Amino acid sequence: MTTTPTPARVLAALSAGVATTAFYATPDVFASRAARVWAKAGIGAVLLASSAPEVVAARETWREKRASAAEAAEQLATVAVEPGDLPDNRLDDPVVPVDLTEAWQGMNTRGKAVVAGVTVGAVASSVALMVLGERWVFRRGESRAAAGKTLPHTGPALLYGVLAAGVALLPDPTEDASGSAA
Image 1 (cartoon, helix red, strand yellow):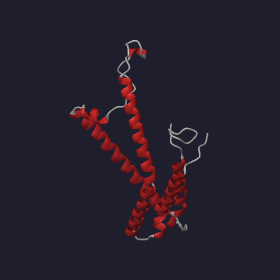
Image 2: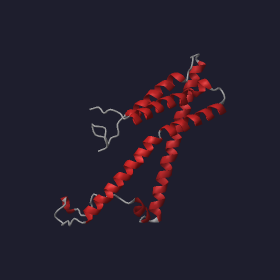
Image 3: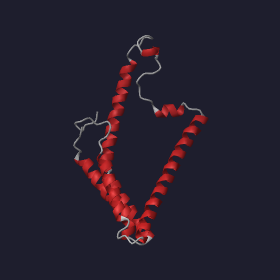
């Protein structure tokens, strides 16, 4: 089943593909490390600016879902449930959204430390893997340059750009066949 991407999604995919290609091809254009850093920062800024419409749309969708969940919780609170009405007599498992602020405030200090530690560990691992991947990509391009390839970073950069554009065109898992959110 296929869906037709929206113009905003096509623009996001195009900008993701072009920006990714430009980002990874910068060593072929700029010999200076400082120039590459500034070029990559500029590419990142352009990519961030081009994704603003999707971010705004996602925030609006999130607000609508939160309002809908709050309304559903209010309706659920008015329903009288008897012990035999739910499977396995589980009254403690209603379909109600969790208030994360309330959950956080209800945690003891050790629980908060565990959540914070897992979060810091996940972020640190993600950054470390990203840095390792970036270094591998750069070293691979440099080894291609040493082997005499012309534009050694640009060839793989084109592949990365196509992959980024393809991923940006994937429909959201919450979209139905018509392209609208479920």
